[in-house]
Image: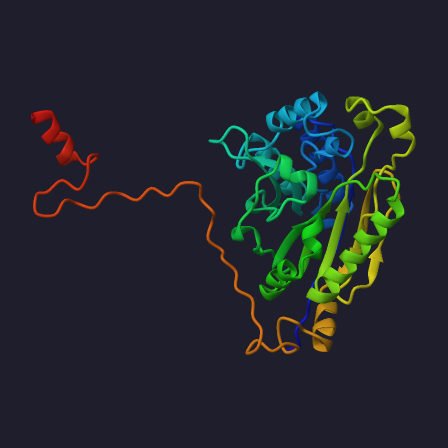
Length: 343
């Protein structure tokens, strides 16, 4: 019996958040998931840090400016814990849509007040939280608010269409990151991007699409690249003056790329929209038969990559061993405390 490969509809959500408002942005995200699902999408990707916002303010003000300080606090207050009621609502929307959803968000650790991560959340069509990854190296101004991820963030996750993975913004240009995902058999690649807003807007979009095409061509995977939109509401809340607004661009540029680096859909313009594309996973076979960089078209006896997939924990607690020969092991041991109390 010959092997057959599925076809599916994918979607890149190109939208602006309800700026620095987790609850409202989550409602908007759920509506967009349901819309994409109703239009047949089975794999839906959102922009970088969609909930509740990308830290754009550092593009306009120095880090010490009161507006930046206020925005930083609002970003943390509206960031997402995983799991939480927010992720439950997103998972419910994915289940209703019958789709895999990759959501860009600012993640905070429940037990730590002040540390956030630039993260992607992977949700299944059954409403299950399949996985989560954190951006390994924050880019430029992101380092002012985001911590670094670890090797657990360079992983793929199971789906009925094969392994799916993701990278965020500049990670899509890192050859080693891309190779690690490809070596794990990634077929569907989710990429989140912020809005490109500067005066060199055209160059920014061009570079984003170039990286998207290279990413798929090198990994022989389908890439769904979702870019953000910078809205008028965001201009108002960041108190941008007229001179800055005049030079500002709305972003956009979302695209879908095939396993040989070909553009299937996009790049999209600078408006809110959902970009759809039909993909045939069998096309991956033809691309890999030509050049499979994680298979026959490489020399692993000469060059290889090592991934440290252990989590980078801030604290490792090692239990004290039992005492030997009745001698207390240290001042914190039960034997030492008993001796001190008796003496």
